[in-house]
Image (cartoon, rainbow, N blue to C red):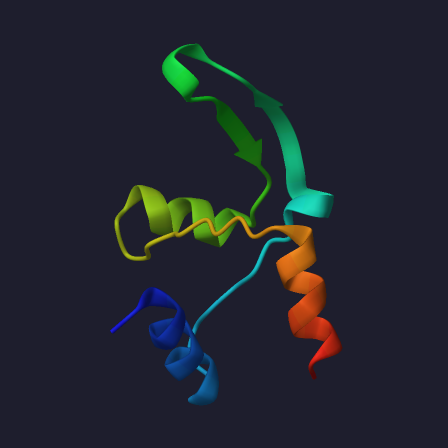
Length: 75
């Protein structure tokens, strides 16, 4: 099962899922060597402690704005 279907199933059962939009939570970003860079995003404290203690997982999806707008228009 794809990760997106898993997320959809969690949402349908009102499961514990959070979203932190990069448009307002991006703290810093930089390009790096060999085609890899890094970013820093702001999340709430409980998510930080959950990630550090491995009680939660995090996944960052980056989608083209054109694709996102197509989906919004189709709703």
